[in-house]
Image (tube, rainbow, N blue to C red; front, side, top):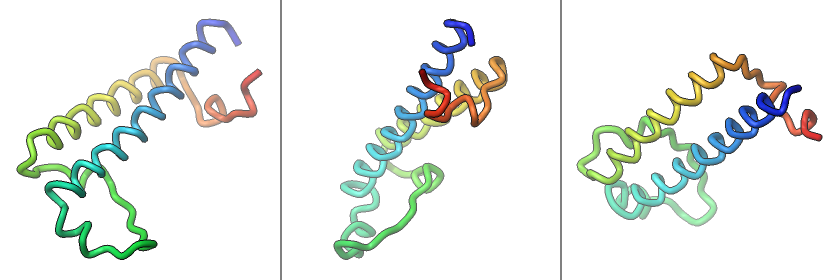
Length: 97
């Protein structure tokens, strides 16, 4: 693999971590603001899977901006994956080294 491709794949992996952190931070903002009532309904140890779609259309301007950024990030990642033919196996840790 060329150094250029290695850097593209490394950057893509970094964008994956940004996307995951963005969801986490968006959830924290939502649960202390727009979804505070929902947060209070959960008991310690309860689990629930959130999706960025659940944060769309809220009255929270900050949350709406984060959702818009998430969508831009997804578009960027999709473009990079398509332009550079990035596959799942390119992203596995087994290919590092």
